Image (cartoon, rainbow over all chains, first blue to last red; front, top):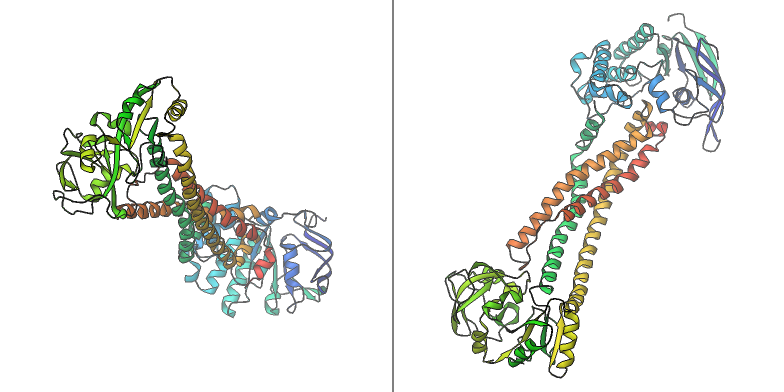
Amino acid sequence: MNNENIIEIKDLKKTYENGVIKALDGINLEIKKGESISIIGPSGSGKSTLLNMIGALDKADEGHITVAGMDLMQKEDLSKFRLNEIGFVFQLHNLIPNLTVLENVQTPLIETDIPDKKMEERALEILKSVNLTDKINQKPTKLSGGERQRVAIARALVNHPSIILADEPTGALDSKTSDIILELLLDIHKKENVTLIMVTHEHNVAARAHRSIYVLDGKIKEEKINSAS
Amino acid sequence: MKFRNLILKNIFRNKSRSILAVIGIAIGVAAVVGLGLITDDLTQSTESALTAGAADFSVINSTNSPSGSGGGGGFGNDQLINQAAVGQIQQVKGVSSAVGELRTSTNLGNSTSSNSSSSSGFGANFRSMTNIIGIDSSDLSMDDIAITNGTAFSNANQVIIGQDAAQRLNKTVGSTITISNKTFTVSGIYETGNFMDDRGIVMSLPALQNLTGNTGQVSLILVKASNGTDPTALASTIQQNYANDLSTSTSLSGNNRMNNGLQVISSGAWAVSLLAILIGGIIVIVTMMKAVSERTREIGVLRAIGWTQRRILGMIIGEALVLSLIAIVVGLLLAVGIVELISLTHLLRGINPSFSLLLILKGIGVALFLGIIGGIYPAYRASRLSPTEALRYE
C-alpha cells in the first residue's frame, strides 16, 4: 500500500439478492490521507454501498479494500476499527432522543477505556468546535435540523477518527443550513487533516470537495479534480 | 457518560412498556412468593401437628380409621375406648406415659362481643365446627398444647381456647363461652402449631366426659415411648396385643398420608406459579422485542460508531435485568400485600404466613430468570443486526 493512500480499493464487487443486483461492479479507487472526496451519482448507483464498504459496515463479495492499513476483507469483527478510524455522519442525524446533546456525543466513547471525566471533557471540547456549548443539556428534539447535524458531526469527531464518512450530510437540510454544515465539515477536514468522503446527489455540494467521483451502475464512470475546492 | 446510566435512561424511555414488563415479571415473583408463603406455612403447620408433642403415637378404637390421629383431627362420630385401657397401655413395657383424650366437635357459631357468651350444641353445622378436646391440664404437653396467654384450666368450669378460635369467636382470657348449655370461663389461650387444633377448645377430661355423656371413655390414648424404645416397634407391639380392640397410628403413617396431600397442594401452587412465570416471560420477551424493534435504526448507528455486538447484547440484557430488579421489589410487595390482605380477611384461617430467606431468594431467582430469558433473545437479535440493514430500517 502506498504510504500516502489511506484507502485503496481494487476490483471491489458486491451483489445483493443472490447476484441479481450488482451494487458494486469492479470499483478501483485510491484516496490519499487528508483528501476530501465527494461520491456522486443517482439513486441506486452504488455510492452508499461504496461508503459502507469503506466504513466497514458491509463486506464485499470480491476484490480488495484496505482502509487505514486494515485489510477489511480479512477481519470479521470490525467494530474496533470503526471506533478508532471512522466517523460517520448520516443524512438523518440518528441521534438518541432520550440522551442530551452532551451524552449523544459521548456514546462512541462508552466503548473505550477513557475515564468519565475525560470523556466529558473531550465531548465538551468537540461541541465547542461546532458552536453548541449552549445546547449541551438539550435533548435532540429541542434542536433545529442544522443543530442536530452539528451534534452528529461532533459525535463523529469525538474519537478523533482518521476518516469522516458523510452520507448525504446536507440531504435533509435547507440550502442555508446546508452551506453551514458543509463549511463546518470542510473546515474540520482542513484543520484536523481528516480524510473526508461525502456521498451526495447535489452537484454544488460535490464540487466543494477536492475530488469528485461519479458512480453509475456500481462502477466509477468519471473522476475529476474540483477547481473550487 | 457511564454505560449503566445509558441503560437506566433507556428503561425510562418508554414508561408504559417498562411498566408492562415490570408487571409481567412481578406477577411471576408474586405468584411464587405468595403461594410459597401459604404452602410453606401449611406444610410447617401440618408437619408440626404430625410430629407434635411428647406423644410418639396414638391408640384408637380398632373400628375407627386411623386418619387424623397422632394428636389432631375430629372424632365426633368415632368409636370410643374404655378409659381403663389407658392404665393397661401404661403398663406395657417401653411405655413412658399414656394419656387419655376425648375429642369431639361442635358448632359454636360466631359471637361478636369479647365478653359475650356463645352457645351451641353438639352435632351442629360442620362448616363452623370447633374441636373440643378433653385432657388433663397436666398432660397438655402430650398434645403439644402451649399456653400463650393466661393459664391452664384449673377446674371443670374453665377452658382454654386455641388462638385461631379465640380470634374467630372474639374471645380472650376472662371471656365466657357456652358449650352445650354449660358456661365456661376462658382461662387461657393456647397454640399447638396444628391449624386444626388451634381452632379448638380444651377442657379437663372429666368436664368433657360429663358434657358429652361419655363418662369413663376416651377417643384416643396418646402414648410416649421410653428413652431407647423404638416408637414404631412399641406401636406394633400394642397393635398385636390389642388386635381386636385397639389400633395404633404413628405420626409417620399419618405423615405419609398428609405428605401426599401436601404434595398435591404444593404441586398445584407450583403449577399456578409456573403459569404465572410463563405469562411473565412472554410479556417480558414481547416488550423487549418491541423495544429492540423500535430501536433497530439506533442499534445500527451504535454499531456504526464502533459499539461491539457484546456491548449491544449487554445493553439489552442490562435493561432487562434492571426491569427485573424493579420487579423484585414490586413482586415481593405484591405478594406480601395480597397474603396479608387474605390473612386480615380471615380467608386463610389458621395459617400465619411468614417470610423465609429461601422464599425471597426464590422470588429473586424467578425475576432474574425472567429478566435474562426475556432479554436474551431480543438482545441476541439486536446484537446480530447488520449495521447497514439496521440503518436502512424505517
